[in-house]
Structures are given as C-alpha cells and as structure tokens.
Length: 203
Image 1: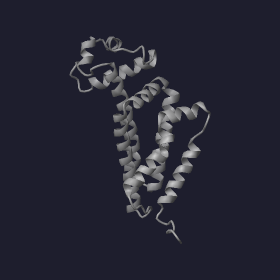
Image 2 (image 1 turned 45 degrees about the vertical axis):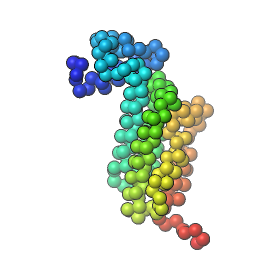
Image 3 (image 1 turned 135 degrees about the vertical axis):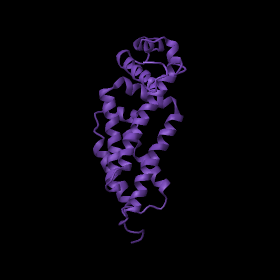
Image 4 (image 1 turned 120 degrees about the horizontal axis):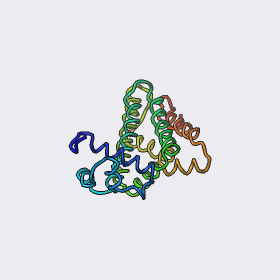
C-alpha cells in the first residue's frame, strides 16, 4: 500500500477507529495509528494535521454514512409517508445500534458533534434537504398539502431530533426507555398534519 493510494485516507480512519475501540479515545494517538499501519507517523501527517483532525474526520464519515442511509428512503419508490417514517426510524435504530455495538465510537462521535457545531450544521442541512425531498414528492403525489416546504422540513427535523441525537438516544437507553413507539406517534402526527385530505381551518 503506497501513501498516495486513493483509499489511504480511509484506511487511516479505519485503523484509527480500531485503535479507539481497543484502547479508548484518550489513549489513541497518531504514533500508535501509524505503527498499526506499518508506517511512520509523518506518513499520517500527510493526510491529517493532528489526532483531533483524524477524530473529526471519523465523525464526519459517520455523518456521511447516516446521510447515505437517509438518502435511500428519499430516493426510493413508495408513498412519501412510508418513506418519511422509514427514514427517521432507520436513523433512530442506527444510533441505538452504534451505542450498543460500538460504544467507544459512539462516545467519540457524541463528543465531537458537541464541539464542532460546523459539522452539526452541515449534517442538519443535508438531512433537512432529504426530508424536504420526501415532502416535496408527497405534494407531487397528492399525499401532502404543504404551504412552505422549508418550514415543514424544519419542523420534521426539530420534531425528531430527540430520537436521533446521540446524546438523547444515550439518555433514553440509560433510563430504560423504548423511544421507538413515541417516534412512530410523532411521525403519525406529522403525516396527519401534512395530509392533503385534512380539513381546512373552520370546517
């Protein structure tokens, strides 16, 4: 494997994630990552400025994976209501799975999103755009009647944040709460509010 291989950056992130899982975030450093790859630490610095830069990239990669997951529902066939539900439930389950199956990476991810509001803002923008796409398709299909798509997409984002933010997901798990039934109830309310067959005010 050469230092200019197209996947070299991803390989560094893979090894960094393995080191975090084995030793924890605090005990993972650039030298150990390089040693695990059979490289000098200077080779790592050709791709990342610091350990913090590597960890930021790990969080950004996780966010990109979640955006890809959400995009599957935005781009698939089927009713907009079903796709909206599938999108938010899939994200909720993904966050719960990461907490249960990959706690060290979950902890790293949670810390970084608290410290990097720019990453969070970009993630929220991408997710809101995908929700907007589903809602817009619902209008085109005659399922939804929405006056302002941007406002409606923001309402969905805000309404489901408690079910997909890693800190909230962790708090619910620690408290022994099954949040998925509540998530379905929230989606039911949103879909009902957006439905094209809802009565006009005053009717």
